[in-house]
Every structure is written in C-alpha cells, then in structure tokens.
Amino acid sequence: MVQDLKSIEGRLSAEGMRVALVVGRFNSLISERLLEGAVDCLVRHGASAEQLTVVRVPGSFEIPLVAQKVARQKDVDGVVCLGAVIRGGTPHFEYVAAEVSKGIATVSMETGKPVIFGVLTTDTIDQAIERAGTKAGNKGWDAAATVIEMIDLLRRIHG
Image (cartoon, rainbow, N blue to C red; front, side):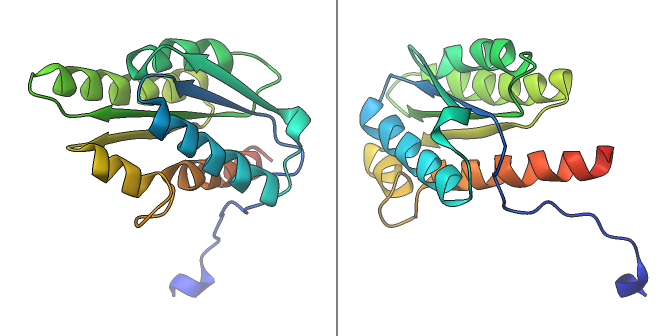
C-alpha cells in the first residue's frame, strides 16, 4: 500500500542553489570548522563558490536577526546557521541556546525558506570539537546537506 502512494523527496544536488552561511565568530575554533564542512558539502554536491555567501556575526545570539535579513533577499534560496554555544557555570547557556533555536525556526517559518540550525549546543569544548569534524562527523556538513535537500524539496512541492 505505501509503495503505491505519491512520494516527494528532495535530492542532494546543489547545482544552481544560492546559499548564505551565517556564522558566529564566538567560539571560532569550532564555528570555522563547521563552516569548512558546510562549504565542502555544498561544493561537492555541485554548488559554485560564486553562489555561496558567508556572513559573520559576533556570536550565536546574533545569528537569527542576520539570517532573517539574508533569507528575505530574493537571490538567496536557503540559509545555513553555524555557531557553537558551550555550557559554562552560569545560566547564560540556556538563554542563548533557547533563543537561537527559536529564532532560527521563526525565520524559516516567516520567510518560507530553509533556514537550517547548525549551531552546536554542547556541555564541553571536547563535545563541540567532536561534532565539528572529529569523532562525531561535522555538523556543518550535515546542516549543508539538509539545506540542499530542503531547497530541492520545496522546489518540487512548488512545481
């Protein structure tokens, strides 16, 4: 029965896609590795360097506002948000992590464009390093693959 249903899925071809990458500079040791992974993914899947724009912001908290401004541009198909929020000894982590995730989701819903959450929220710097290209892969790569698939999926849905 399921095999008889119409199915729509996105493909992993970034050819012709215009993607903005909004990157927090705070914890740049991590965010730059995430950016490298994201760009590698996009280029390996057919994006050209001319169609990629990197926008750097002071920290993760500033990502949603800039992602919103960038996503509203007609020459942007999707946005990848990259950064790292690492737990410290104060409640600051909870506030920043919650607001960044809500903000990014809101931008996606408001603009109707894929705005992908590639912000690490970890307890330790070691966990962040693991997710930025060592043991646990590169979450920047994963976020870029997601934006490719979502841009293609939305194109298919809209015809």
